[in-house]
Image (cartoon, rainbow, N blue to C red):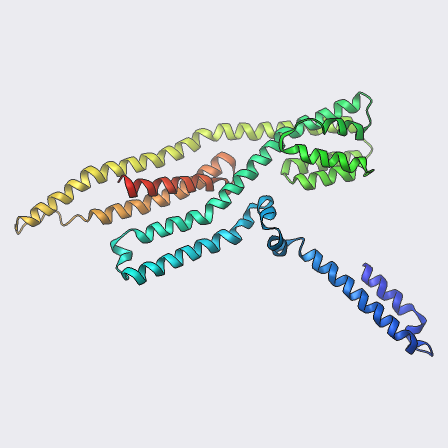
Length: 349
């Protein structure tokens, strides 16, 4: 039963609520109390709304985007759509519909709209990945240091206080917050659970859950911390080995993209250019014979440009899956290769 239900039950049990001589006198007081109660619950509900979901994003956009990179899409995707639709309408109104087929300006607008949509997410995801990597590398050392100091005779709060004065990368502010909570008398199990929720990484949640359950069951805290340190070290080590082992495949994916650009550049600058010049020479001579038809060099280059952009985008996603096991991690490679392909075709091919 919630607090509101308890209050309602208490009010219903009052004698004056069932009628009688004093009912009319007590009615204004009870009505005022109920009005005050509804106001309190309304404020609680409003506060809850603004602490989670879209309302929290409206109030603290930068903080929410740092914690949850996906939320940047609330801004980047509408901005990209505005750029794409606005650029399309501006080109059509200024030059007519033919500009879509006779120039590459609409392609440029699409490329920049795509970059506006994915670059902020890629940068925030990269920042979050670096934070998670720093935390996962520091967790085993933190658990091992606390266990060693606890074995030397220090109390657990004192051991954590000493450890909090060290440097553990991105984990340092969370350790100091844990030290502050324990200095206020918060039990170790509750404090370590809060620590895991604030750190918010898969390895931290897994280690904290192990420590909390073992400590609640009455186990030796030092041994539990040492076991958690060993588990965290093995987890981080396996993750690093997997990333290093897949690095060669990432390099192959990226190099294949550059080989594709090189082949297209050679093909366009030699073979297709020669064919186009020969076709123009035959047409200019007035001969009735044709030379394999007219070669539209602009059309071929535009098709090749589209192919390079598509390959660059999806090759980047594949590199992210191979290297880090996440599609989102490949967005940074996709954005970079799309930009390289656009620069190559606009200025060199």
